[in-house]
Amino acid sequence: MEIKVLMCNCKGLCDSFKDSDMNTLPFEVESDLDVKYTVLRPQLCGQGGAILEEAMKAAKPASYLLVGAYAPKAQEKLFKKLIRATGFNEKHFIPVDIRGTDNNGILDRLCEAVAGILKQEEANPATT
Ligand code: SF4
Image (tube, rainbow, N blue to C red; front, top):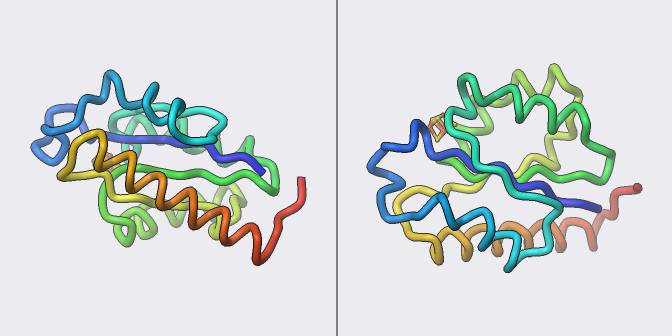
């Protein structure tokens, strides 16, 4: 089982992310959480979507994608087509709202999401 973290801060100038430091955040995430890698890519729902598409296509059955951006419900709706087109397991797409907080707040939210994945894996382990 592996977890990859992709984060998006809109165009980088959005007020929702004004309290976070996106330069230091990827390193902090990788230091605090057991994840394969962390990538920050603005405009995941636009030009940056190519990286999400590649991560979905390259995913193994036991890979999880933790996507830190805006509201989870909106992410599910927006990325539904991409999930279908790539054949990615929708249960392994974990959207997290990282808006309106600082780096510690984002780390807490991601940590909670990782704990949720571990629980899900315990109940229903994926293979390879
Ligand atoms: S994925 Fe969400 S956070 Fe990223 S650019 Fe689109 S609306 Fe903004």
